[in-house]
Image 1 (cartoon, helix red, strand yellow):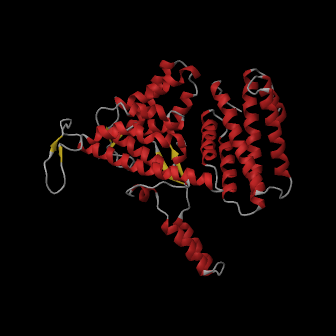
Image 2: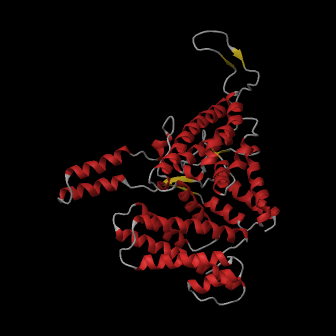
Image 3: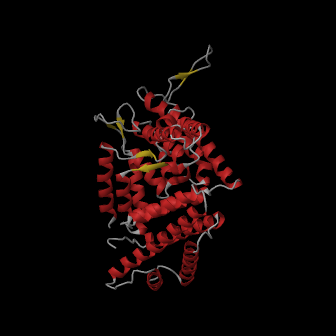
Length: 418
């Protein structure tokens, strides 16, 4: 797709988002009301002890929902980002649109979207339906732009544009509220390196906004007031929100970095791998693969993280194998249809076509076959899947697909029908 046309279509999507926002965070956690009812029934039936029921109920009562987390001051970061999901129909449309742009034009496409940060950004929202973030009834497309930039690998570009802002606007205030949400609910979408320097990225905006929060400043309780020559009346509301949200973010950054350190020092799931898993899901959705593949990968993740025994681990590897197999089959089927060639609906011939078409090198194809063999043998043999081996296979499948799907993405690949 030509860049000019892509920008025109992106403008249509963002204009609609500005009027009727689709971007929200949802809590995928336990429905504690239903859980308490279930525990009560089990307790009455004598299926569990009172102490067990009270322990589970206590965990639920301590857990804050999304609204509760937003009300914290300072805000905190969820150590389990899989519990919260960013959902947006218009984000999906932007992602699909970007995947139709020539690879060489993608940076210019993203730059065009980011330019709205300095030229647009608020709308009076007259609907009675509640939406977050909103500022005195105003909503914006800028929160979506921020999420889009971060989740497509353009975090630095986003903050470079933000640092150029010369005046506090409602749109910028809403954007900061969204970034505070992203850090709180999905901190692993930011790399550890990004978090280390994010404070310096935010400094220009913080200093600019702070100058618009007061006409003069002095020591509380007395002393000479120092006049602020940069102050322009009428922007205090937006400026104060920006300053407050940045202070929230600085606290969140510190906690997020601690979680990265904790994950590196403890035997806990690798947060970088978790982040790459989200990239894989983004590729699967953006390139048009069957949504069942995302469901299969998510099921494998649930079984891996919540596993109780070897049966669950065996099932986890089974789902990983199914995901691994059908990604290649669907990709090969699309390539075959483009060449008007019939490809057998099996892994081996699909992988051969991907190698012959130049998608995979000889070394990559050899590695892919070896990994598939291991997945097949471990998934088929009863109860041979220990947790350490399951973790290794999970990580290898995720990282392999970051490479494989990135290759497809750079070739402007799209699954139209499989």
